[in-house]
Length: 194
Image 1 (cartoon, rainbow, N blue to C red):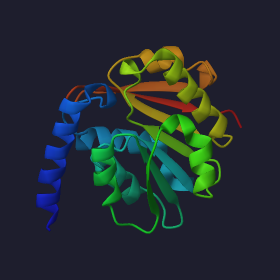
Image 2 (cartoon, rainbow, N blue to C red):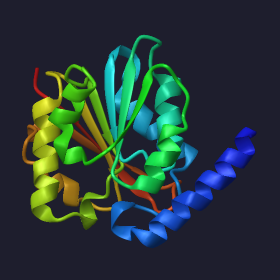
Image 3 (cartoon, rainbow, N blue to C red):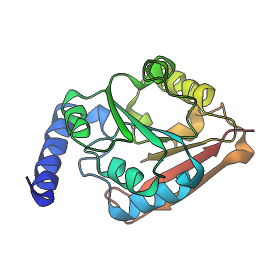
């Protein structure tokens, strides 16, 4: 199957999963190339050896991460939605691990794949639609598991993630807006203190 057919079928699966589970996806449309470039720029993957992606969706951002990361790095994607996990699992790259499960179990998932603390965590999970207690637990887990000096990048429709994310130092946070995406999204970046 050629790349164009993959992308067309991926977009269809993404759309049907949004209709079935709108609270699990941040948008009905996959991320634009502009948004992917902004995410990659904020993640600063040049020195990262272990990268975690929460909510890979149709795998578009996953492919952008793989293209930007070094040959000796590893990428673990964690997807709760079965249909989207199936899309993520089709990506063929020896540096890549697709995991079907709940991101709140990040510590156990990392241990299960014998991976060290991640240098970067990138999240497309829509914190705005999550239960507050679950969202806070996930953010705390990200902070705990992230390596010292590591980055957490979350691309979101609104600022709820920032209000809930009390685990990082406020001085270690930045935000940018990507208007060339449907919908426009904020890209938050936190750096864990060394």
